[in-house]
Image (cartoon, rainbow over all chains, first blue to last red; front, side, top):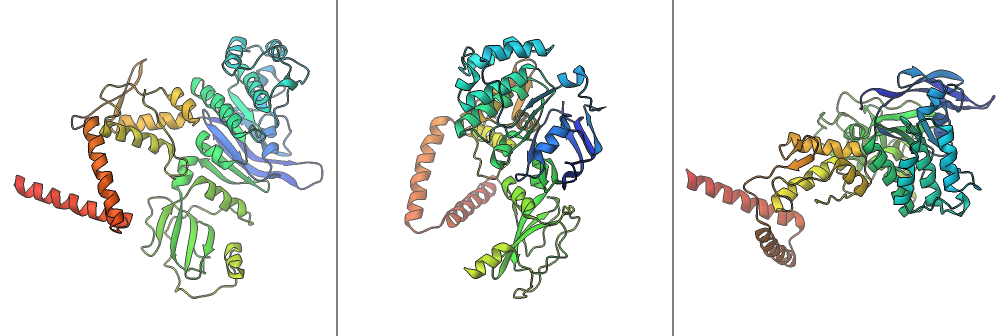
Amino acid sequence: MTGESALRFSGLGKRYGRRAWALRDCTLDLPQGNVIGLVGANGAGKTTLLQLAIGLLEPTEGTVSMFGRPLRMDSPAGLAEVGFVAQDHPLYRGFSVADMLRYGRSMNPRFDQAGAEHRLRELNIPTEHRADRLSGGQQAQVALTLALAKQPRLLVLDEPVASLDPLARREFMKTLVEAVAETDLTVLLSSHVVTELERVCDHLVLLHQGRVRLAGDIDELLAGHRILTGPRCDDTAGIDGLVAATHGTRHSHLLVRQPADVPAHPRWEANPVGLEDVVLAYLARTDTEPPRPASAPPPEPAEPGRRLSIVTDRSADERQA
Amino acid sequence: MFAFRLDSRSGVPTYLQLVEQVRRGLLLGYLVDGEQLPTVREVAAALVVNPNTVAKAYRELERAGLAAPRAGQGTFVIGNDDQVPHGVHVKLAARLRAWVRSAHEAGLAPEQVRALVTTVLDDENTAARTEAA
């Protein structure tokens, strides 16, 4: 069930050699039974975080615990709890699907061979075919089927659908949600396709430049953010929870992090905001401090017409246009 | 079996869309009292959404008294007596559609149509109340 933590990171950081930190100050609690989406630009640290989470990498600092115990991937018991599908779902190209099932069974004590064969039959994937003769979508499904057959408590997927066409993506995600519905599986998956995550995930972690900028239950995150539209407000420094501002000549849109039950000032019209807009706004920020959730509504907007030297990129573009 | 659908651009959270469809289905006669809803797994697979979201929608339906679980069987809808028979709804919808079209032709904006409908509904309600008193 949900509620307890599947993964807990505290002060986690990773540095490759003497280069810049790939990940820093990562403290997170990921709830059990959830599907957790990890988003961020390329190079944001997604793969590093996933590999730290399952012990494929040693952290430079900080700790990871899985299901309440320190991560131990050097023991068979620890390994048995995790399924992992790496980017581009690599398979043994010369192996037939049946070979891979046989290999999987001999390497994993709890391998559900019958379940895997049943799933592949449903997907019309011929088990006598060699991996390199399968389509990209089929290869992804075989990799997912093998990982699920292990009956892990935690399944980690690195960009599982990035290389797939829309239909294959949908089929892959369908297999995944069915597995989640049938078992008590926790899934951690990375992607940069936000629309995909909105449907399938219930928890989101946003990484930007090696740091966690936003994390939480998606419904709560959406309820905690809104767009305020009102007379142009250039002096946004005093606005609590401001994430992003765009300005027209006479009006402004402010994306703010505020509890939904706090009423906005009557001069602001408050509207709900979609997950994609929230994610993009956080990814566009250049500072390192995430905005604190505001406790108070923003101040009354300044008189329109006041100019300020700092404008957002978008309004600068508008003026040039 | 009741078929759910999702509008990913509506901005309405998925679980609320599911709740709203059951509510509507009951009002319009697409769902009847005692009918079984698809299982969480079936809905999750059909829409490719998170099963927890479907479970949340079903909990919300139970809270609103629109559905009830039966142990080991699934979730069943609870109908109300003032349900509109399906034929009546179709007939009324056709007439309403014709009326809306004529309102558009008369130059009314959707906002104005809505305002007009609200006004008439309010008037009718007031009239009904005065009659009852």
